[in-house]
Amino acid sequence: MYTAALQPIVNGAQPRNIFLCGKTGVGKTAVSRYLLRQLQRDTKQYDDVELSVCWLNCTNLSSSYQVAVNLVNQLRPVDDQISTTGYPQQRVFDILYEELDQIGGTVLLVLDEIDHIGSDDEILYEIPRARSNGYLSNAKPGVIGISNDFGFRDDLSPKVKDTLCEEEIHFSPYNAPELRAILEERVTGAMYDDAVDDAVIALCAAIAAQDTGSARQALDILYKSGEIARTNSEKRLTEEHVHQAREKLEQSQVEHGMRELTKHGHLALVAMLQLAFEQETPARIRDVYPLYRRIAESSNVDPLVRRRMHDHLADLAMLGILDRQMKNEGRAGGHYYQYEFDVDLDIVGDVVRDFDSIALPKGVAARIG
Image (tube, rainbow, N blue to C red; front, side, top):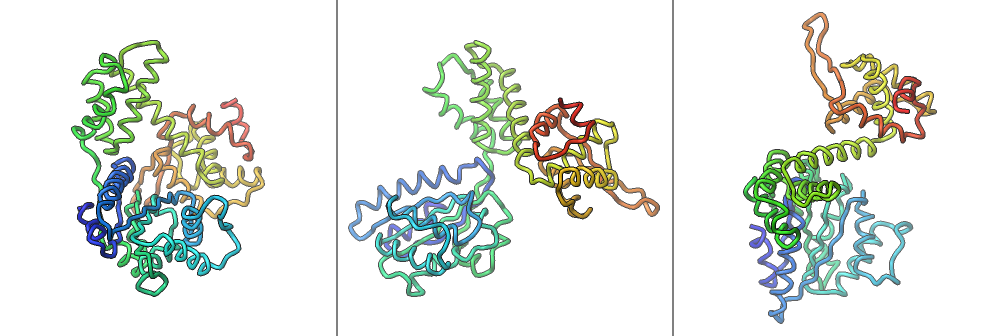
């Protein structure tokens, strides 16, 4: 399907715009790089087909303006970059069109992590239509958007959705046999023949297949298993190393999730930790909110209203840091949520210890040192 979507380029026609969607680690970027390298090689045999590919990761870009500026600077020499601020958006678009026309031929703009630009999606409409709107005469641009967010497509404006999603390709999670084949290929030549056996590879593949279906996760587990074995001066990987690796990676992921929270997410986390240390969990929002307010005020932070603070507890539950249970007490008590930690409190304490801008309650400070 992906190959068929790229066929118009070989035919010298206007490229199709392609939207790729799938979970992290299922091969969207890797497959795209492979196919586009092959396509660039194949088109060299045709005198009437010129293909250029420009890659841009949009992880830290939150607007069409920022994407356009970064595309211009990708296409220009290092000593001829434009400033990231100070231009009207249309002027930046015009500069981009000038650069594309100078390149000429078919130009594919691959926008990885495209969902980071959010609702400011104007560039996803403008670039594909630039030639038909008279902004380009030499270049035929096409956009390949890559996203991990299944909801991003639905949030696009109707005109952008019609333009970008001419071809929509979903990448399904890998199953265990597929992951096993990927691991076996990576292991060949990377480890001694007797360092890892089939059972270890099968276990890594099974864990990843049951969790995310991600090749990246399977490889991370295998590599972490190797690190643990080397640390222990053991020459052969075992299933026990795999289980230890999985635990360490999950802990690292949880810690990263907590550190990346907003200030109010951190305040909510500290409030929940205080209640957990006092053995007052599971806790309702009515129990958490007063403590959250006190910690915020002590930290010189304006507290959020109760409903907004509740959103941060929901985020913690979504990240797997808290467990959220709905309770129903009928007409008398109604429906409400209760929260408690779903991870080891020592892990939470290790992260909270680094919250220098938050005035920790005495009970928390005493427990985490």
